[in-house]
Image (cartoon, rainbow, N blue to C red; front, top):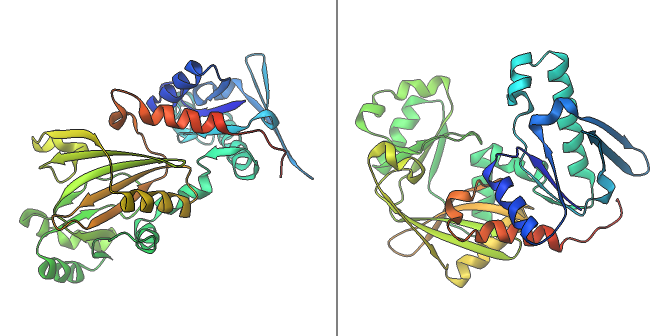
Length: 310
């Protein structure tokens, strides 16, 4: 059996679920919107046992061979958000979330991806060191709350970008003169500054041993928000040089991520820079129109064989 955990309306979950159905593989979705209808029994003794029940269904997770997990913040589910985090509903949602998270850490089933493996994305500077160790070039970086240090870094490099230090998504932007006048604000918010690397962006999805690369050409600082800058994005599927492809596989494996979204930029001189690794990539926009990534994830889950608990 294959387990899906997240929201039915989440596009990656929905596309993988669709591909599994086309393969005639049994997949059960634990939909977070139904959390108040669910109960869970978790025991950890000589082995871990976990049973989830809702709507007349009793799901024994010992039968699961593979799981694709993209859960959202349990307190963000509409019914839970309305009730509040300290309500009985909020405590129930958190307890169920934590039980499933624990199961995902301890099961011998294939989990795409374990939350412990996703943790490297919680600190961009830490993850950048792991990327460097994997052999990719990384931009010169400063994380600081010192406005003077930030100003000196900008003076030395000329053109820099700034972004979030944590795993929370932020818009990557070049530091303009207007923004530079606001550098005093970093005193109350640790900020990551990086040298601006000219070149062409690539989003690479590693799925097991398969590598899917998408080339993105745009004048925007951050192609994800190109419309805000009035810039277009040219998107096309491509194939990476063999050495770069191998390095992407090795990087994902070193982070213990069966599925990873890797952000690269090829500089004019041909050097490949890596900015970060997304451990739970929302791949749908890159996957149109042939759903190669969704099919690859479905195939990865389908290949997993049931094994006994650790």
